[in-house]
Amino acid sequence: MISKKLQDAINAQINRELFSEYLYISMQAWFANQNLDGCANWMDAQGKEERFHAMKFFNYVIERGGKVELKAIEQPTIDFETPLKAFMAALNHEQFITKSINDLMDLAIKEKDHASRGLLQWYVDEQVEEESAADKIVSRLKMIGSDIHALFMLDSELGQRVFTPPVAPA
Ligand code: OFO
Image (tube, rainbow, N blue to C red; front, side, top):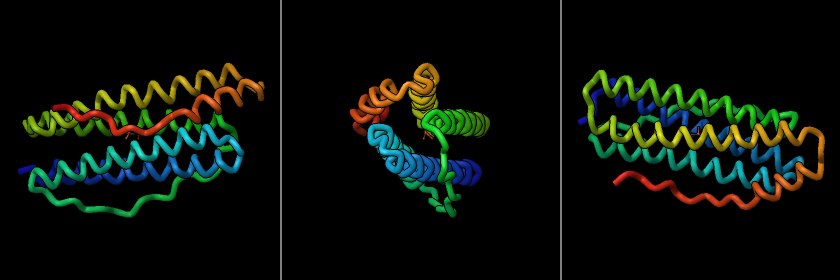
């Protein structure tokens, strides 16, 4: 059975993952209003990924005999000003999430909870991808600057993203 301390910490992380979904669909709405449908699609896929992250923790808590306690989800930012600022906000958010996953791992190590360490390693690896994906788009948007044609090309590329549930460890 999972300790109360770890259970509470994972419940807090479930809230952060659900907030992440909320933040990304807020970005999706903003991009859709800018008629950048490819960027909106990318955010839609990212929101679905966050939901997957939340539910993976959710199922784990239950599997370990713990109690899932859902808390209120904070309102996300609704105006992002420019595509670059939106993706920079996404990158900053992922860096924040990485830190919270690392803190959870520290707690699992302290509690000698090996099952949770295994689960959290999956998230540690996932965060490498999450940060890298956002960082790459930020870099490209910086190169694009005010070149509308290049922005539309990137938008079209981001429109190809499809959410596929990440493969969980065996
Ligand atoms: Fe759940 O990784 Fe992004 O926030």
